[in-house]
Length: 434
Ligand code: ADP
Image (cartoon, rainbow, N blue to C red):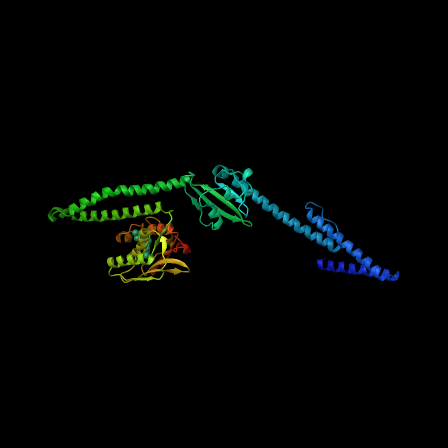
């Protein structure tokens, strides 16, 4: 039977009791008293049932009260809802326990905080890595217990797509990485990993490349000197070795360019995290680059649209190298008559530098790998144009160190568009970045 039909029956019951009271009163010559007493009876009954509901709801483990009619139905409904919510709560608790069990044995610190940032749970590794324990610190604000550079800002900003990396400093010797995910109604699961070994390896690779490139410069200069000396000898003397000499000269020049790019890349990597504070007028910088390139490639047509006047904060030498790499690539990988366009403008509020060409384009499968060191789509073509395969790696590092994103768009056979998108506050991030 539905709640509505029970409700009708209850109403008929009430009307019946009132009618009976009124009729009895009429029979005894006091109809008003009879009706009043009947009303009182109804009121007492309903108050009693409401009291039962109230007592039952406040006493969680209490027995479900027994009642007939509409009240019985109501108790049944509430009982069922209560059971469902208890079951859901139980399921949630058991998954939380399961999660906590699996996090317990992890080597990384795992911390769960409530929506207000207070510590709700943590594993043993959090103790050894950060010096916090559940017994002592449960319920306390996490940021008041963990004092790591940029940690509280990172948690407050709420954008956890990119993990926070905390390099070693004078206060703490380890390199840490923080990853955060939110769940439930704003609870956070925070992982803090010790990535010191990985950091050391990266540093070793960086130092090694930097040192080797540096050390190779001297022998290369000597070789270059000898080749030049030999080439300046009498034509009769060098006639027989003319071809190898030309080859040696070309290879020495290639190695020089390669070493220059490697050293430059290792310099940019070393200062990647440093704040960029100098105001750079990109319009002037791009104009200067384009003037130089027009002089070096007089037969090519380069258009510029420099429509954004604001300065950005950055490093002029790095930006110079990134922009010239992009424009030189556009010239190298497009035909003689193809137009190259350079734009500096606001795109949806983001200061954007775009280099566009109508050249050979790039097949989609190569695009995600272009910024890898030494990655070249067509090795022979790149070598023939004097390429080292390091140009776009340099551009990407310059972009990262300027808090900008490098976007690459290309249609094979029709041309390519390379954009550096700066963040607005840089006065100087968006889509697929490489
Ligand atoms: P490289 O010194 O070989 O030019 P880069 O790192 O600058 O090295 O570029 C990597 C590869 O990306 C190049 O070898 C080339 O195949 C491709 N590439 C770069 N820019 C363009 C472009 N504008 N059009 C077509 N292909 C390009």
